[in-house]
Image 1: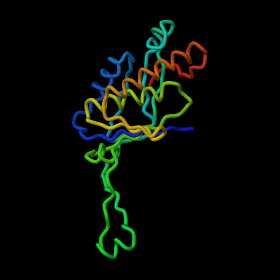
Image 2 (image 1 turned 180 degrees about the vertical axis):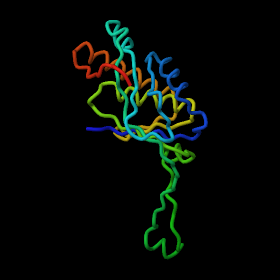
Image 3 (image 1 turned 30 degrees about the vertical axis):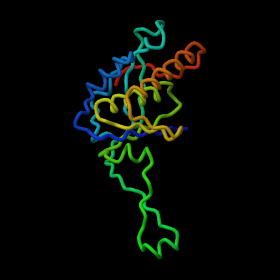
Length: 187
């Protein structure tokens, strides 16, 4: 099973892999993004090395390989046009623009969107997608969309609340022996 997330970005000029790594590390999750990652040309799995000490002291000094499928795409907002009922259409002889929903309004000025595809084969993938999105929200004026829940986040602090909740869930999974991980060996 795969889970898709989207981050609609309004300002890609502020995107930096180094700043993304520093930002996520400042959240308490020490990471290194694959050194050859280029957001504009990369499409596919993005390997990310992370240290396990944020889960448990017993994992301090242990590194894992995780990541997610990612691609960056151009985004062009197109408003939804509804045909008016036949009687009104005959009277006004034109289409009626549908009222914008909050999500449409939040993403309409975006120039790009990241597609994150996560799997259940690694316990860290969703956490890393949310943490990456929090960085995008802060530095690139992004809106993070979770279509599974119907929620979108346009404020970094709201995503951080979710990141912390995911970390708490991962700690419980570790304590119960249910954490699915891959040891980091090399790029």
